[in-house]
Amino acid sequence: MKALKNIILLTGYYGCGKTNLAVNLALDYCDAGEMVTLIDLDVVNPFFRSADFLTLLEEKGIELIAPRYANTLIDIPAVPREVSAAFSGRRRVIADVGGDDAGAAVLGRYGGEIERAGGADMAYLFSVYRPRTGSVKEVHDNIRAIEAVSGLKVTYLINSSNLGKETSSGDVSASLGFSNELSELTGIPLLMTVALGRIAGEVEGLYAVKRFVRLPWEPFEDE
Image (cartoon, rainbow, N blue to C red; front, top):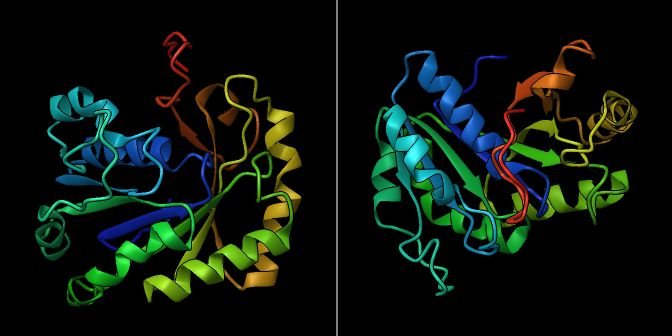
């Protein structure tokens, strides 16, 4: 994977795979010997949270900063005060950000810290199999809205097109044309195409991930 800035911001519409990729990246950077902080900045969608994987992250020595009320029945869009210090520190920071302009607005308050830390790479995840990401124009419009409210530019695209555990290599391959069209329209380079490990070996150039985020009734299977 291309060398990225010390702060990586993951954004994209709901259900595109931000949280799953955030956990995978945190683990991969940790395995590479870096000190990692994972920040849950998604104050809009409370359904899938990085806090769900607190035990796994702690076992690896990864610091997790999540909303105080994550994993409770209380839904309050509060951002922990530790976030500012994390952006100002020297650890590798991966932030899971809300999926639209309302969710990304929280980044605006940290512009100073991010700039002083050398800036950030903000990656926009998209899945052609999710609502509101079925056309290049829809994705393009959402990117511009996120940039407008956050005050930051999307520097990379990430194709995370999937159908959950039913995903095939054909499903991933079918999304590659969309990726190229979107990159051409926006002028934003494609950083990677994400796929489960069992698929990554079947299509050249994919970034292999494990599927940590799953529906409540799905059993855990090593993928």
